[in-house]
Amino acid sequence: MAKALIYNEADAAFRHAIYQFIVTRGHIPKLRELDATLSRPKKTLRAGLHRLAQLHILVLQPQTSQILRAAPFWAVPTGFQVQSGKHAWWASCIWDALAIPAMLRRDARMSGTRNGGAILFTLRWQKPRQKRWGYRPGCSPSTSR
Image (cartoon, rainbow, N blue to C red; front, side, top):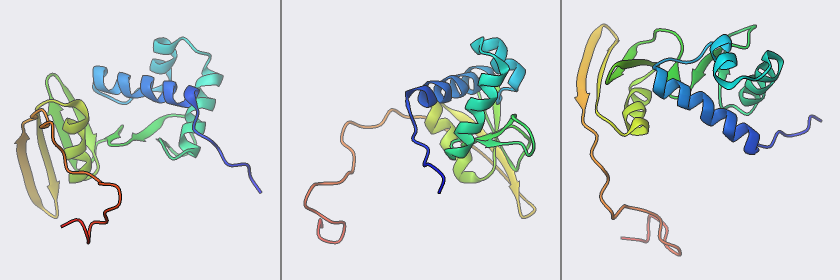
């Protein structure tokens, strides 16, 4: 039986560096860009990427160490594009497209096509109100009304 992988601080730091690159540069990094940005040996970077893929945090291109997907971002053109400021990202579905401005916490313009129809809309980011819906200890959704 294979030993279960456990997400650790090194994984979290590497994941954060990848997402920071995606948000600030506007695209998923290639291995050479990670190498230049993080100044780590390529062998270490490849091992880290494969570990994050095993943890289901990233999806890698088949037969490579290149990132295909770092949810909700995609490295290749898909059915949805999200633009914010001077950057644009690809998303695979409307839910991923909506997740990008929520993650960025800024306005975005989304466009896409599905089943032959075009979708185009702008989402304005608004700071959440202080009070939020949430779980109250001792209450289940069916009894909390």
